Length: 558
Length: 40
Image (tube, rainbow over all chains, first blue to last red; front, side, top):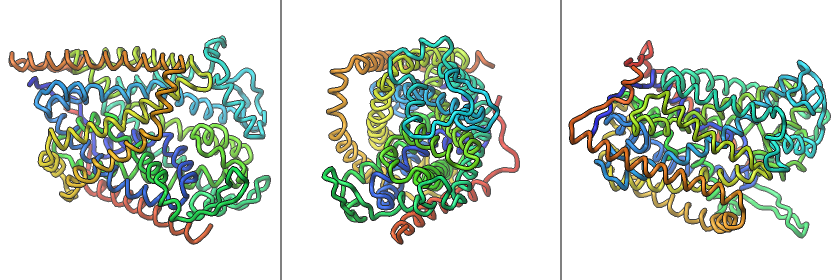
């Protein structure tokens, strides 16, 4: 098999841990998790959540780290190369590995768009548009500096007009849409950091961004926790807000108006709670998206991947449970009362409608609003870098291109998808279709493919040996057995339930909606492209192996 | 906030924070004095 000489590595263990944690920590941690807790039994949600953390997130994450490092040792960094090398050149598995780059790449196409919302909101708070104080500039010509929007309805309108929710193509009708400019800037920043390389770009940025996220979050939490029962609020205190989120005993208003009280057992006996908790942990840790596999392939052979994997997962969980658990819901309850609760279910609604309203009412809210959206922006950009790197590695290895050329090709394809999302903004249909099929459905399929690959192709014994290699924390051997006998069947059951609940409506939507069809056509084109690329690359590697040639894709850079 | 809320929140936060701090401690203990630089 063609050996591709290794040139790039992470500079330090902390660097790779922060990069993987930065990849996992995103908007889902800060905006999706609190809504899921509130809507699925409060504190009761945490029981299936912690069980899923122990039985799925930690073992599967470790298996992906081990697989990635094994592929990296053989000289490959893309999921295609890793699958090809580990399977001994089997074409079918290689193609599946190549397709593993699809989900992260397409997710990045709309994630950049969302990233630009965070950037614009942060700049707006800095400029003082959503608050009367500040520097007094507005990047939106139609919004006067110092304007108070006052209600969630107004904030909802503001958000809708910002993202062009009323009409397709509305963002392109403006002579200079700030959102499109911000999207271009975010894309440029992303691809520039990736171009700079693993150690000099991604790692250096994550080493700055991750601690900054932590500092911003702690400052916002300290502000929220010291508000007491704020004037101009709903009359509820911080503890009431925490109680609303965490109490396992809950009151549900039925359609008839009757109030039903549920306890912890009602929530635990509801399959929806288990499905929601497992899906949340699964999406949050970002397993099997290709990012961990690619990132871990750049680790040096003797490093402790068991500890690195556990640390990245623990950092993600700390941000989600501790930081997000205190930051989003309590202030919303304190200032807006229980009436705002119906908006907690949607991440966008909580983040871009409810919380801006809260920051308007909060003392020094402009500053804390800026910190909050800066935090979201940094969390988003560290995630989006990890979404592109598998594709860049794929192009480098398949075409024997330099990093620069691979980054340019990835950026051009990425731009096409981003334009589709930015054009079809009416009710954010394109974004929703991209999100459902690539960020929700495909990762489930790939976690099953990858776990099958690890168990049945690579083998449990190889996984155990790779995990133990260089490990100082002595990972217990039952981790391997958990992946095989618990995580894998557990995931199959959860995916079955999830597909049964969601797929029917979504397939009907594709059949009926033109934008969904267009988006689907785009996905199919990419699948075809990646399949052809995978077959071409594997044929080339096999030819090179037979000829005894070992080409280094980085030689052109050197 | 009910006792059940305190219990669920307390146990979750304690578990996650302990895991996070333990990992920080182990990584800190394992770090060489200077970072390893690229091969390039």
